[in-house]
Image (cartoon, rainbow, N blue to C red):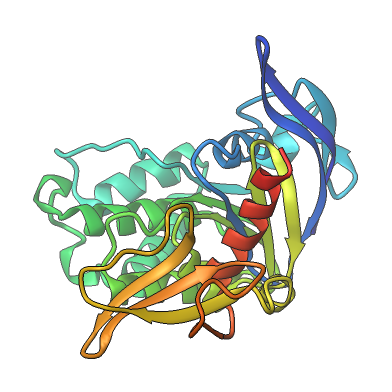
Length: 290
């Protein structure tokens, strides 16, 4: 499948939330959507899921304008929003049966998928328990199961690892990555390590603009020779205005990871960038130009 976003903009009054976005998203690998708060990630997702009409531009799913024909997207969509409806009086299984009915799944097929998804997400033993007794992470896994009901061909998840412990996060991102082999799977997240591990394609938004689209390797290549590490004495802070991506207390002092075009201290050494470093390099250079 192919999703083509052509010159999309969204404005609310005089505020431009998305500006002239153009990109192509395809099945064959997980797509990571990253960016700071207010970058426009959730607004872009609302446009793709047909919850919001763009002020200008078009979104085409396999050549069909989903703004004019929203059901073309809705019939193949699995969407996990940031805030998921919560029905504490229902069991996990009953809630998923309710969602399956809304999606129009035959009861037998729906029950088969529910059993498989509860197993896949580590909830097989608690399917009959009420959601009121679930932890936040368990409820999030139920919401993910609901998103995957009906075997959607386009899967959009907005901050899906919220409330999940490290093992659950790994399990989820591996599941989404495996599903992306023949589906469009877009994951928006603030946790860059989630996309660094599994995303084939990364989108970086800033203030409604697309700053970067490409692989994690390409993004890190853009940050080469701009990530430094040096050691400060205990109690000493990095210089004012420094763009710091990490501070770790070690036995020999405070190890600082700083983004800079030149050597920030006499003893600073160049190190290999992580994806988080690379995103900071791109975002900082964009801010510096404004």
